Length: 126
Image 1 (spheres, rainbow, N blue to C red):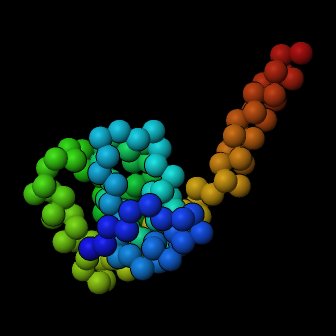
Image 2 (cartoon, rainbow, N blue to C red):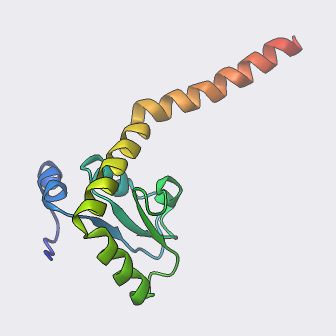
């Protein structure tokens, strides 16, 4: 385990790519862009239920969500599961796929589709 402290943005990919998994057991975070960054590096994730990115984590597929970040037994169990080579590889592939599905381009397309639906409804009312 390595605690690197503050890392320059341009060095972050090196750290993600050197990892086996990513854990973010915060008590509160509105989204946690770092979760998607870790997934884009092919890392399965372990996050708390208080991290807004929990809606993109598919339990046991691309990571795990631990509701209580103080529950060390559950955290240890999830980490042990994720560190098995075949599980880590499978979950890492799914994490990478999830990151691709949640790119900025995909987010823009989803928002645009909502606006287009609203516009179409308004045009029908005219």
